Length: 225
Image 1 (cartoon, helix red, strand yellow):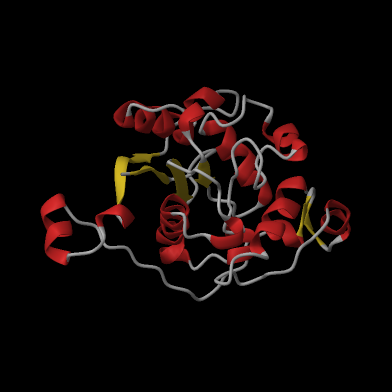
Image 2: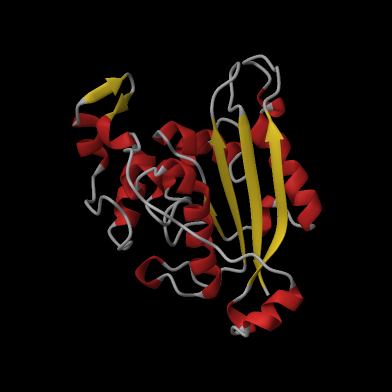
């Protein structure tokens, strides 16, 4: 409920979000139930939408002729398939494995991240992925959310866009939409939801389900040039 309330509060500042209504924790808990303990505002709606990026080399950037200071560097890009782990092996979660691989490629760690966008088809997804990304110790994602660690102005803001719970989930456009938000953050162009001084950002997006985790998952680390 704390994650959900936080994301809906962030959505107030995102003109591209499907929903811009803030919720308190009490309002989230009192909303119609979906399946215990999930209530309606904790779930991402299906929505129409689109997103796009321009991906290029240094030579391509020069040819485009855009402002080099607005270009954001991809420090790491990792895609992994599901593992056949058991439920009591969280360290082997596809998200945790991909995150460790991405940090190694980027030469960065969780402590270097300034902002994150993660797949929150339900609010619990954000808690799981915050722990997988090393942004919270295992089992501490919920308490971190309650303390405000993941809120704008907190230790590591997560889903400043409002997350999928607010922004909507246009399926194929979901991941690029997350990267759009992080690019805006690193450019310093996110307006009222801007994370001050953001230099490094991490994105997680997963889909499908096989066994006890996502069938496939992608992680990107973006860095300000």
